[in-house]
Image (cartoon, rainbow, N blue to C red; front, side, top):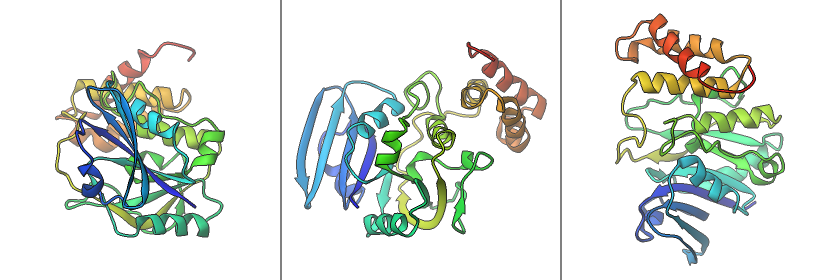
Length: 260
């Protein structure tokens, strides 16, 4: 099985990112910048493609790479990660040992952990998928392509709604019937060398975007997701009470047009 890393990056002027990320497999780098070109070359024996496009939006960036991917296993990445030695072998072994898995979620190394650490192999379902982000996800490319699963280009950094493209991707996988599992293996370290491109604080805009995200994700469950979010996270929502945070999310969700 061929592993291919799909990197969402910005403003790359050379190929130093490959060394910095410790790329040890084929890769496609979606480089949102101020020019338009496609560059194909060999690097340390691997096939590398740079997609240099003068456009913005992380969902669009990931889709540009995904629609051109030809690896058996595709691993989504951000440009502030450094992969562990042997990550490609870790992925191929994991998918070989778990033929039932269409999507696998792995652990990331953090200096100050903020993400849940997977402790055991387990199924990811609708009640727990929101805890996982794209940069720890690998997919069987043929299955994802067959089911037409892509990133929503209205969400994420560089778009109207500042976050959520990764949640919507996993939601789409589950809705299409793909089998998603979490695996207790570490594949990369977050270098934490740059601030978030979208999170400027848990303000009113964030809460409204959260409501939009939940409604787009599920017309049936969105209000329940808003409520659980307000209950679980109200302490970080800049002093807002549960009811105030919940109301802001509802206002965002209700702004979405279309069938209820």
